Length: 121
Image: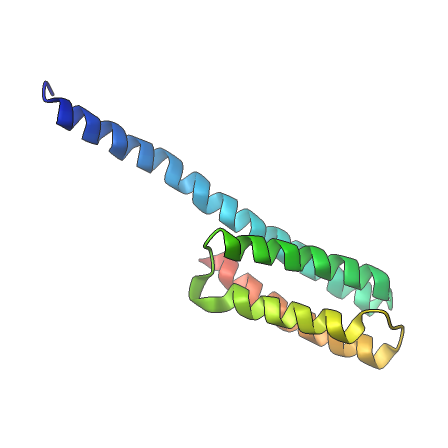
């Protein structure tokens, strides 16, 4: 390998091979965190703790948005999950009515399905 271009290509190839999985795992980290927060929101919602439900839903929404911002949205599943999380928050935010909280929980469960699918990619 006395050719400098060959050495440069080999270095670039190694760098890409080393750092590509790191970027993918950082993106999946946001999806994994969104899944965890959504699960916690559902648990809190079923216990009729609307403020905790909203807090965990907001956290999940932030992580999902961060995943989209970093360019990670396999087949639009994260974007769909964001829509369901926003709907869940709109339904359950600032209310202690059990029927509205139940609708919010159903929306969060739909978001969870899409986040789990996105996490598999």
